[in-house]
Amino acid sequence: MPDAEPAARPSARVLAYGRIRDDIIAGRFAPGALLSENELAAALGLSRQPVREALLLIAQEGLVEVRPQSGTYVTRIDPDRVREAQFIREAIELASLAACSAPSDEEERMLRDLVARQRAASDRDEFYPLDEEFHRALLGLAGHSNAWAAVSAAKGHLDRARYVGMSATRGVQDYVDDHERVVDALAAGDADAAAEALRGHLRFVFADLEAVRAQHPELFDGTEAAQSRPARTGRPSRR
Image (cartoon, rainbow, N blue to C red):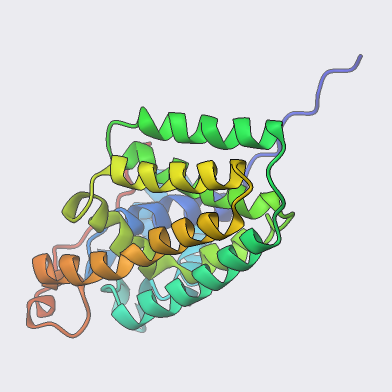
């Protein structure tokens, strides 16, 4: 039997996009920070071109603002974009869940394994990618995995609020409890209970938003505290 084909390596632009976007979501690049293409390229071991292309893609999501003759700055969290993204996400995920039948044994094992891995997460940095994987897997139950790209592209500002909220308003295990309730309802064939559990889980971001905004007004558009700009930064995290 011939050896399996090696997995395709991500393009330089895709690599730069993922790393820079992740650092913005996690707050490692603070709102208002000036990003240097040269420093980003050096830190990532890439040329400036894929970094520039990645920043343009990130700008389309409203996570950075490119100012001619000035530079590229990380935007502050826009509450209106958070609400719009939540509307899109809830509509897509609940519609997909409504189209699901009860999961197969294999699908249930996969979901419960994800929940178990989330239980073992020590902090939000470990939990966050598993949370993304769980919601993508829920879409996959009804054959809608490709819809995750639309959800992901819309929710940059939402994710930033959620990420801060994971330590400011609820513990990681509270989110895992939500996921377990969804899986339990699906396994029991109770579509209504699964939808109710998922809806409540997704809408908790509104409580997060108000709590985080009260605790960290400097992260948000339209606040006096947002007028001071953090120091220049341009190095992605080492991951």
